[in-house]
Length: 159
Length: 287
Image (cartoon, rainbow over the protein chains, first blue to last red):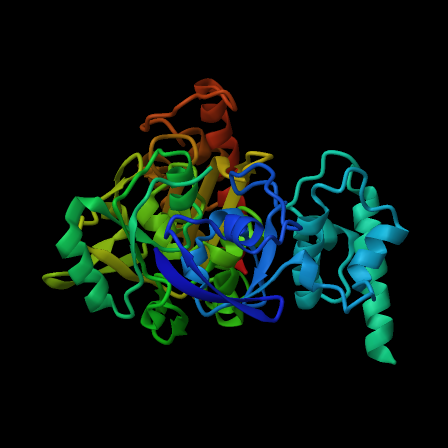
């Protein structure tokens, strides 16, 4: 066992883990943060995307021990209390989900995309979400949801 | 899926990593970006007893451009893709890298890791061959430099010694009269190359004075295309010359078929993508 301290959604957690523990299992099973999903488990579907030191990563392909001393943000850490993050609101308003399984990863990947490109074209949104698979929506409403969030975030920033 | 158990080390220097490699020998694997190794470990295709994580070795990260381009082995795809200096000094590299996997893969994956892994369908090895890069390594005996052409020896196999670490990749800047390009037929789900061709062309006046072409995805390892290169040399680089040279692509290499594409289909695509890569490379060399 290795002792690690990881700050998740602003709160530090110190836990003993086996080196082979994947970050997604650490979040879900050690910290009970089950918003991060396991989809394909082969680094392709993006359901497990979280932010590691501000950068989106697939938590099924990252070891928890690699996150010792790091900051992790999960879907649970995105809202500001009861106020939804613009991306969460966008997925709600634009019906960006059906079953919702891919949604946490979709939103975390989109948050990284908007951080680097605050005003993406539809093509750039699609390219930016290349690592996230959705089997329900056909992606149309997901693109609309991200566009909604981008517009809202730009309006807020302009105020 | 969970990997089998291993001991974990995160050395802070190259010297420390080498001494761990010496201590644990065949039991140990180097963990770079982890986007090939960890999936393989989850599937139990790899079960190293010791993992040496080199992510904390700061000296292995970053791009330095002066006379030539020095890319630290642990430089991520993301850094290469968005590096303004690289875009102007050797634009084909960011272009190739932008086609790897997806954003999350590019945030973690590294150039050195990909070369050491030597996946037969990876993009970067083709570019590294076409650009005639040098691969700098560090081992117990000190440093050495391996030419890209001597680096890949078989499927998932390189001339890297078991206790050696890649520290940097050295690439020449592309100057006037030089052009390079990459043309890729990606697998729609994994984004690995079903066929990928990287081409480098140097024009001296109206004649092609140097040419290197490398194919990935089609065979067991990334492979230079000597016949295509010879056919291009001293030609005028016209569409006809390119078409003729591209017909030679794939002739002298093993080509593999699988459920995604048969051997015949891959052979046909090698020629098509060689023509596309050469066409763009020549156009760029003429600019």
